[in-house]
Image 1 (cartoon, rainbow over the protein chains, first blue to last red):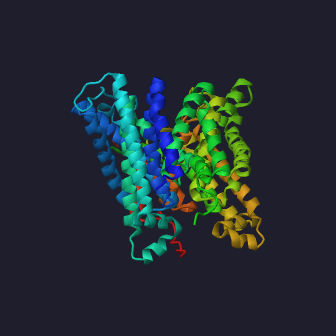
Image 2 (spheres, chains in turn brown, red):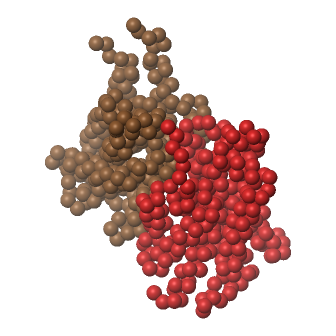
Amino acid sequence: MRPSRTSLVVGVLVLLAALAPFALPWLKTPVILALGNGLAALGVIVLVRAGQVSFGHAMFFCFAGYAVAFAARLWKLDTFLLLPLGTLAATLAGALVGLFVVRYRGIFFGMLNLAFSMMLFAVLGKFTSITHGSDGLRFDRPTVAGLTLERDAFETVLLVASLLAAVAAGVIVMRYFASARGQQLAAIKTNETRLEYLGISARRVFFGAYLLSAALAGLGGSLFALGQGLVTPAMGYWVRSGEFVFIAILGGAGHAVGAFVGAFVFEFTQLYAAALLTGAWQLALGVVLIVIVFAAPTGLFGLLSKWLRPARVAA
Amino acid sequence: MNTQLFTLAILDDVSYAALLFLVALGLTLIFGVMRILNIAHGSLYAVGGYTAATFGMAIAKYGLPPWLSLPALFVAAIAVGVVVGTAMEVGLLRRILDKDPILQLLVTFAAFMIIEDLQRLVWGVQPYFVSDVVSQLGTASVAGITYTRYQLIVLPLVALSAFFVLRWFLSSTALGRQITAVTHHREVATAMGVNAKRVSLLTFVIGAALGALGGALASPTTSLVPGIGAEMIVLSFAVVATAGLGQIGGAMIAALMIGLARSFAIYLAPELEVLAPYFIMVVVLLVRPQGLFASAEARRI
């Protein structure tokens, strides 16, 4: 079987993300952070499939980050234990919040998520004796499979881990979308009432999707925290959640790859825009977002896949 | 908790709820007509506050009569409502009415990011605090508590008049009834000859001016720093959601409830101050998913 053009492009992108940091070592951290953001944006994409958008997903990103930070400080856990631990913590938090929010749709869903994320943000900022407030928590570089690594080697390991995680997450999400459950999820967007008439509980379907998306955000947050060695409440601020939605729409919410395309464009625009237009990069992002919504609502990857999909339908 | 603290908490609540109500009123009015939740509404609050502070400083600097400071707050709010409101409605919102709700939210989020940075470019990051109005009006004593007349009388009075004027406007004037008609059903109202475009613009400007008025009236008692807009949009949404989207009367009760929860939290458990409003909202929505005062909506199959 011939590999499709899409998987070819994905392969090239993955190789590029893996090899570029070896040519330019300073790229390692930005690539790790971009992949972390991309995973969180992938979580947003899962919900967009159901026509819903969460303006509070950074809470899972942030929650996982703090779980990693606390575990690293208290128990000195290994990197390969911290990653699943952070993801698990976010998934549990997702289950708790999800029980409540999956009953709502549209603006209520988006803004209730926002309210929950503001609660987390407030708690992290207020209980300074435990969380160190807005200064955040710093933690020492954890061991990797029992080995104590230098910064450079640690980052290389983390980079490879992030890439593997991103590819695995992308494949899982695309498979999920193609499965019966994924079709049911998409039906929440098109017509939820009809879905219910088929005897399928929309709430249960959506709850599953919510768990998946919280887990993805948590995995992203864990990687992000490890990549920085520092977590702050700002990781969970609602504007951050908005940025994840932005990344998802920028890259294209129709395909898992969109999240990562968006995350890389975002990360590097931020890197350069912050240097070029000090204090105005948010403005630049806003303008880009408006242009995307009007000119390319399917996102960058949507534009790309027009070219990828041949116009004629093969017999 | 002694009586004095209790009275103080109530007074704090009333003055705070008055501001919150004004902002929430603007948000819910715009939502009613355009069916768009304007995330940039908090930025209008911030810009209103900064503009009012600038006016206040100009009055002091050029030696204009001090009694001008109070009207200047209203002038600032109207100016922001007309200028920024018109720019946003004409430039963005009227172009996204038929788009996917997710994209609508995102566009207003983009507007929020843009205004937030513009505001930082214009007014910088240092805190602004112009409180001449408050000191001019002096203080009054209620049940043994000395409180500023500005917060005790002016703020609640403005909020109440905004509420009653708006209610009268919506139910008793031709233009107001057109707005109400568009809120109920845009297409039908258009078919009946209502110029929905004009109604939208007008509503947006009024709503924006209300948001800016909240900021302008808050400016003499709070110091303006970057980020107040981001905080306000979340709070005013909490009010609007608790009341039920589009419920004007409910918004006032919800603002009082949330203000009360907040001011009692400040005196009893200061760490919980920020949590209190969301806690109220979550509890209310748990029991009544559409908000306290919303009527049930027909399902479309």
